[in-house]
Image 1 (spheres, rainbow, N blue to C red):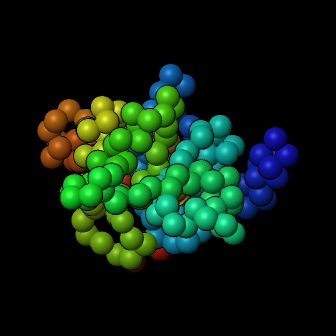
Image 2 (cartoon, rainbow, N blue to C red; image 1 turned 180 degrees about the horizontal axis):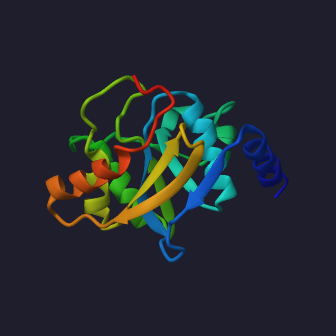
Length: 184
């Protein structure tokens, strides 16, 4: 409560606004965080989701969940994941599989994923977020930070249709007008 008030004040003082178009009945989804070009993105994204009452989670290697960082990472929404095989001789599960399985383990889960997989310039997004949503049978929400407008938000929700090329065109079409922190 107190932290939300402080965040609202910081947003107001810095000129940032927010726009939440996430339907309230969606309790599980993959939330794209894009564009991701700066370390400031985490601060503004996390702050915006606190203001909008969207309880986003993100994944991190389980070894980072130990003391002294673990309590802070959990507070910020971190979920530790371990890709080691459950039994000796089994194959190591893919990151997509481990993350899709999280949706079966939680009644409510809004999982934040950076589509680019890096803060560096990239011409192609990774498609893991799409495969996670498809395997978990959950929608994809388009979260964004528009530094030109100073707006953080969630806009469109897309349900994977099975036609990844068409779905990706729709997703990329939305993001083409969003200005990142570092456009180059």
